Length: 366
Image 1 (tube, rainbow, N blue to C red):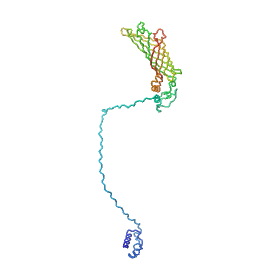
Image 2 (image 1 turned 180 degrees about the horizontal axis):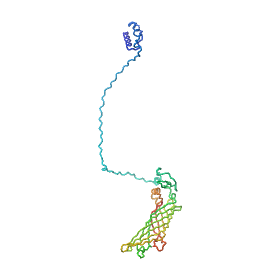
Image 3 (image 1 turned 180 degrees about the vertical axis):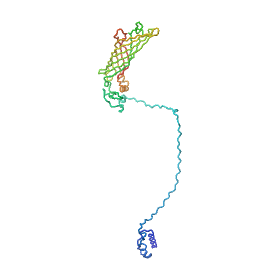
């Protein structure tokens, strides 16, 4: 049985053409059964037709493909349809615009130091102003804007007290209301001399006056050279006939102010002498209703003033510093004064002299 199986293997090797089985068989039992010529004829002699062929590779068995289970695909999930609401066209005329009030927070109170920091320490935009070209007194700076020189106060000067920061030259103006009683004036327009109290009574008049002048500052105070103009109208029928009096007053003078005693001029007494004249127009209405007037211009007389300036900067320091930085307003004062008019130099003039009377107003220094 073993011999038959071995013979089968030999023939199968010849059939498949494997070179390993082309060697002679050395088994004597197989040679006796198959014959001595079998090894020589079948194993030692090569076929000339296949001698030069390349050796064949053994056949590779391909594995059968693995069948995948047939799994049904899941049914698609229905998605809700997306729809846009219809666009409503609105007429602009039907739209009502409602102003929403701005929400404001209550301001917080600030100390004097914080207010000073807010006014002084706020830097200006560096690109909005060119470099200073030159410097003037008290560290002010001059800038050229639109071909004009503009002086800008430095923050250092703003912090200085008035006694240290003020310059040599300045200017001021004042608004006064001066109480005047021309009790020595006599009316001649009717051809009859009448005293002032007989025509206009004993009530005083209040003369509105505007003053403006140049101010020179020095170590002992300052001197103001100023001019003034005042005007008022008066009418009365005390004498039985309607009478009118028009007064125009002009003056120029000098005033000395003691405003350099303290670091700030909280109070500053002053004294002044002015040269004045008046233009008096006295009138009445005749029986026909026509106005008859007589105008007289007096000569030069002297006008004396004694006053006291009360600084108002301390009432609102923040506003005072802002006015100083923005407008150059050094001081604002309440002006209380006494005044007296002397006789004019021309003896033929109406008597415009008065006793000392009072007045009040406001004075502003730049």
